[in-house]
Length: 181
Image (tube, rainbow, N blue to C red; front, side):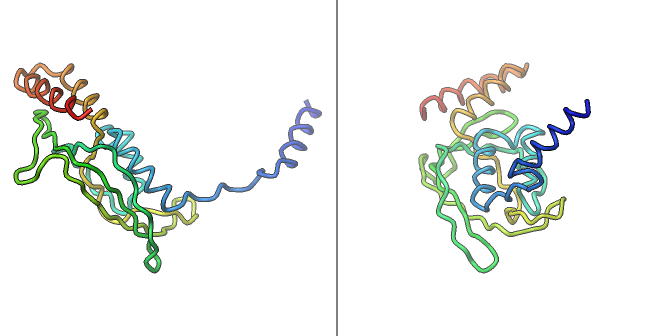
């Protein structure tokens, strides 16, 4: 038993990564995590909300009144402004799904398929373990789902509801969403 412990200790000490901490994720990596979690529907699950909220300075409370349906978009190039880093995302907005009735609509006065640019600021904070880390300033915005994530969500809710109006709205919403695939 002592020989095994001695061999393990020698291997662990010889490893160049032993005892070193991984570098903290960059501002761009933190923002990319948010965008990915949000687009995949993370805001509407307890686990996903906790992961997203941890990326924000002041996340607020979950906003579950509607889902913004987007093409997935992409991140904008970050720029440094003093101690902050400005980041953003750009996407095509197809419409929204009003919750909990699963009613898809396009905002009044806006054409569907409008290109939207959203800006955010990243700030360095001290994390729970005392290490510096990047966080997003402000509140978590409304959920932004890709078309596929919205279809998965509506299909799941439709399958779990007994409300006839919600089922009918879900069928119409799924037909509209399939148009954007």
